[in-house]
Length: 135
Image (cartoon, rainbow, N blue to C red; front, side, top):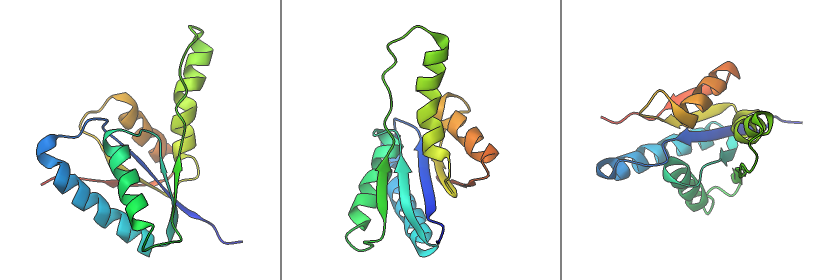
């Protein structure tokens, strides 16, 4: 059985308004390149900012590239003060996003928070990191 090529996306929840068009153009080019490389499953977790943009582009491209799929990783609501539950509920979706991913497309501006944590986890998971950089 052939290995499904997987790509996940992680990035800022808020995109700079001055750069939204540039980010979108670059992200679409990256996604098209990944489709050419055989990626068929794209995963997002955050449905705001960068994650929402990635989901929108993948959904649009599905009309021309019927082999691709979008998977949305659910984020759990933390209702417990128990630190074990908190860690499980917070980090489990991050791991589900990245586990088994061959590529991780990243747009981060800060070296803290969940996008940064996800990048560090992706590096340790041997996913190829693709940084979306602005000029």
